[in-house]
Length: 591
Image (cartoon, rainbow, N blue to C red):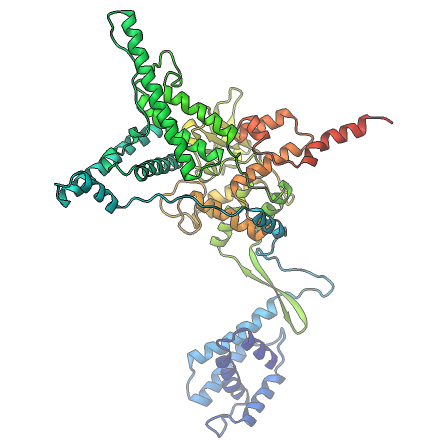
């Protein structure tokens, strides 16, 4: 038993001294049945006690209850009572021995490894390092900052006779006016754009107004407004006595609209130069935001009976031309290179599935020159986290990847439904937990307000793919929704997936952070959900069996046109693009 005591003290360093003390004091004296004459144990007495423990054989016939009785007997001999705290230390030794005896030994001829969720399945850290080395250093952008002191100084210069309270009143009134302007404009944009897009557009407006204010020292907060960015010229002519008069008035208004538009474009190009915007994608974002603002101000001016998309508005037409010119003359869109193939992403997905399937943490321990597989059960919260990671990656891997916003906003009964579709494509909702409904399927259902990508209604089925172990996709979806989701969700959160700690719906950063984290752990590279769309499109383009119909169908599922699917999302190498023709010629030409 002495060797067991030494190992127990080693594995429990914080309590080792107490465990050794009670095991060499009360327990051996209980076995001897007599108390020593000395108050403190000498080295000679300690050696005798260790000799007693060394002779005790620990096997399947060892009586643990009798050991506890001996300890209690020794406690009465030494201290006159049983100390419950010292007894707990002795029981810790006995429990440690029981646990080690019950741990199955691994056969020496079979080399097994304990499963570890921290073990990477793909080692591509060298790719991550190469990508970092190729990355150009960021030059940084100007920070546009306007403080209240600047607002006050300019107003004091304009109104030297007014007091500080009056100046502050003007500032507060103008800030309220700007807030009203922004709210009205953003309410108009909500009809066609999502909240996250509106938030980014709002930041662009702030930057444009701030740059205009800093560039012109004569401007005050009274001169700053959204309609100061866009020239508003009503070219309509109401009543005229003669046709000549009408032509003259129309020409004057048209000339005014052209002049104001030219000034607006010159002002915007100066902003691009001063702010250091050289990317076509960034420039187009600013131009698109100004087109949206122009539509807000010209919605009551444009002739909707003759023009469908503001073709009669001079500033909107000019901004569209500038957008095309930026795409031709500025730097193209910088797309991050993909670092994993689709098959490697599948391996990461399988590893996440194994994390959930393993109900125990496994650890190899060695005892008496024998190896044992020690298993510790996982709690439900940890298994729920593993299941959610697996499902989120699976939905972006074995199916054409949706946008990450569709994934994080997925809601059972709204955008994720279970049921059947008849011949006329009418949907009938069913209960996924009713065994009678085994013919039902899961569907991604997106209405125009869910994706805001036109007026098209999307309804795409998720096929029930079977894994090699006999389980299916639907098994894990049902497990998550019916059982494990409840261990993470908090409050009345309705989304299918939830954040691990807060239990509410996912945010953009939480989804990106989760994917980067488990890809870094499993493959040593960081991959975000958007890059999975590039990986999938590249995989489909590289498949020789995937014809044009397959590519068009994949682009439809990804909510993109076939041109975008084949160009922007496709990262085929030059050798891969030439592979099909080389294989064809090799088989076709007979020499």
